[in-house]
Amino acid sequence: MEQVLHLVLFILSTLCPVNDGNHFRGGIISWRPLNNTVQGSTAQIQIHQRYFWNRTWFSTPYCTEANVVAQTVIPVGSYMTCLANCSSSTYTQITTNMVTTDCDLNPIIDSWAGEYYYTETLPLTTSITIGFPSSAWFLALYIGSGGNWAIVNRMNLASRPDGYINSSPVTTTLPVVFYPRGTRVTHVVQMADNDATDYLVCRWSNKNITTNYNRVDECGGVCSGLPTGTILTGTNCTLSFTLPTAKIYYGCALQIEDFFSSTYTTPMSSVPIQFLFYAYNVSAGACATAPAIIGVRPNRGIQLTETIEIQTYCPGQTIVDLVTSSPIGMTHSAISNPSPNLWIMTLTWTPIASQAGPQGFCAGAIDNSSLQSAPWCLTYLVDYTSPNLILPQVVQGSASPIATSAVGRPSRNGTNVCFHLDTTNASVLCYDAGYSPNVIYTGYTIVIVADFTWTPGQSYYVTMDSGFASGSVFCHAESAPITDKTFWRFDIWNPALSSTTTTTTTPPTTHTVTSLGTTTTSINTACTTSGIVVTSTNASTTTTTASTTPPTTAAPTTAGPTTTGATTESTIPVFYPLDFENACKQPVAIMSAVTMIAFMPLQALAMYAAFTKFTNMFKPSNIAAKARHQQRMKNILRR
Ligand SMILES: *[C@@H]1O[C@H](CO)[C@@H](O)[C@H](O)[C@H]1NC(C)=O
Ligand SMILES: *[C@@H]1O[C@H](CO)[C@@H](O)[C@H](O)[C@H]1NC(C)=O
Ligand SMILES: *[C@@H]1O[C@H](CO)[C@@H](O)[C@H](O)[C@H]1NC(C)=O
Ligand SMILES: *[C@@H]1O[C@H](CO)[C@@H](O)[C@H](O)[C@H]1NC(C)=O
Ligand SMILES: *[C@@H]1O[C@H](CO)[C@@H](O)[C@H](O)[C@H]1NC(C)=O
Ligand SMILES: *[C@@H]1O[C@H](CO)[C@@H](O)[C@H](O)[C@H]1NC(C)=O
Ligand SMILES: *[C@@H]1O[C@H](CO)[C@@H](O)[C@H](O)[C@H]1NC(C)=O
Ligand SMILES: *[C@@H]1O[C@H](CO)[C@@H](O)[C@H](O)[C@H]1NC(C)=O
Ligand SMILES: *[C@@H]1O[C@H](CO)[C@@H](O)[C@H](O)[C@H]1NC(C)=O
Ligand SMILES: *[C@@H]1O[C@H](CO)[C@@H](O)[C@H](O)[C@H]1NC(C)=O
Image 1 (cartoon, rainbow, N blue to C red):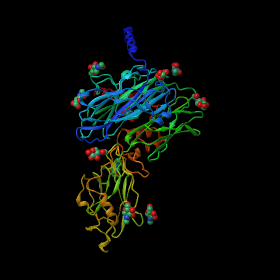
Image 2 (spheres, rainbow, N blue to C red):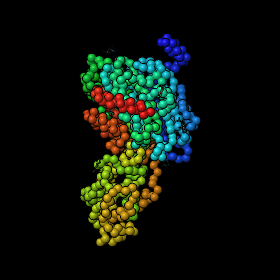
Image 3 (spheres, rainbow, N blue to C red):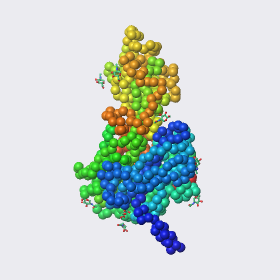
Image 4 (tube, helix red, strand yellow):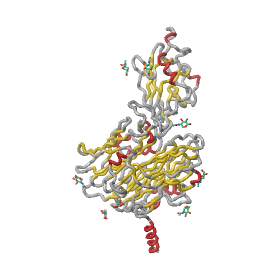
């Protein structure tokens, strides 16, 4: 029996062309509509591919950072094709020649990574599996060594239950994650989704073409590439396993699927993520503590310059490599050691218009005992229009701030709108936009019902905290704070004085308004006579800015909202996850909350990054392991 198997394998391997070498090391495929509103019968879909390769497999010269800078194309020479239900679409195959993003010369990593974005116009009937099956996986694998690879994604453009076109989940990973041999470890795979309310579950990729959502082989040789006893908790994509053998790699193949809510049983898309674990024997001289990345807060300009700071904990512990997974165009400096126990690499990146959308970045530092820091991953939101508040619009004698995109209430407390007395700057009235019923969000407009007795003849101005308005896109990006006294200034009409001091045609009849008991979704016209008269000089400004139709948000391909310093059209601003910090209710944020508990010293990082970090020393109790096993069985059985 075994001999027959060997024979078959032998025949298969001789059939494979020699230059289809053992060079595949994983990847990710995801997609999103450029505009998720249904318009007509087609949509523009941006498809993203990222693959990791054996650096020394492609012809010389092997890649270096110079290729990252030059954005050299990796000569893969193949295509991502349609694999199932192809008649439902007009999808045409996309090249798998990637633009170089990361090149790692460390002999253990030795990887060449690239990514490629391509936009196709596809009919909304599209319900296809796309993918890149070929051969072969590289040789030093625990399971699947030299086997075929398959990496597939399901694209279904049918309207979601909420009427929009779906976006697939997004994820990011290091090409190789190091863990010590023989130690139970917990590894969290990052999951996020543009459709913030989607319920995300990850599962093992599998070969069962009759039952899996993709209807094709999803993982080639690395299905169940991790040792037996590995437990996957799908709802938070957490793996728990023990790597049995040192100095080899373990292929991990997962599908991340998005469901409209936890009660739905059919996913809307299926995103593959395949990467490697590497097991090492902890050497006698190794430091007891792995290095840690202690990033510094990046600037928020057009060009991103971020310094990755790495802390080491032992004398002689040397950082030999920082393995990264970067967006196109991000360049990496050499690692420097400016002071004892501190190591630095500077990343520089100017996103271009076609990079609009979520852009993942991961880094992991490796010391000379092969200890790897916890992966440090964050998602940059490029060109996401966090709502810009523009000058208040006059509505029947009152004024309401309007926003550049549809807004909603921030989901956290502590975002205040305050009214200040112009003469002393003293705040006379504040509402917490997080819960106050006096702040009403309706479409593009925010109505503030000021329940206050204004002093006639006085001037007031309004300030708003960061996040006073939160947008309706990815994780609800938040508005910038308004502290400028002149942004929204108003006078209270003094009936004792001549009415010629204001240009208003309908002087307010009262200086107070009744408070509103409950939040409503439409403007209550009874509340709009607020007694606030906009100063005449600024009234004209506001009436020209405000129109009855809301301003259109910038399309992803155009320059984003203006930021100070934005001079060239080709550059676009980057919005950091700070903009939606605690407001973000989706898995990225939940994950970072977990991280904050596990990594108190690194808390500062959590301030701005939607990132994941996890300890490699986690030893789950048997009870927890059982619970995860049950969860896993449930996830398997639901399909
Ligand atoms: C990468 O490719 C080179 C050249 O084919 C090969 O010698 C090397 O073993 C490969 N690396 C791994 C880790 O498979
Ligand atoms: C194939 O595509 C059609 C049209 O979108 C869809 O109705 C059908 O469910 C798809 N079949 C499978 C097996 O996904
Ligand atoms: C696929 O799943 C079905 C249903 O669970 C099972 O009957 C079948 O044997 C599986 N096929 C393979 C190849 O595992
Ligand atoms: C993932 O979910 C399981 C089951 O709910 C839980 O026991 C585990 O702590 C979670 N892991 C993380 C990293 O949140
Ligand atoms: C790792 O350590 C184990 C246990 O000490 C040993 O059996 C094994 O040979 C070591 N492997 C390597 C590659 O050093
Ligand atoms: C790491 O490098 C330092 C400095 O070169 C050296 O002193 C130390 O012994 C090395 N540690 C290991 C485990 O190789
Ligand atoms: C915000 O504060 C209100 C009133 O104190 C409270 O009812 C609500 O639960 C708080 N919400 C959050 C998210 O903390
Ligand atoms: C009010 O604030 C402005 C700007 O912040 C400042 O220039 C001015 O001196 C302040 N006035 C008083 C009375 O504190
Ligand atoms: C009106 O608004 C403009 C633009 O913000 C500002 O320059 C001007 O000082 C304001 N005028 C008054 C009287 O506040
Ligand atoms: C998406 O399309 C709709 C309908 O044409 C349009 O109103 C909206 O502004 C577009 N959104 C973006 C971000 O371009």
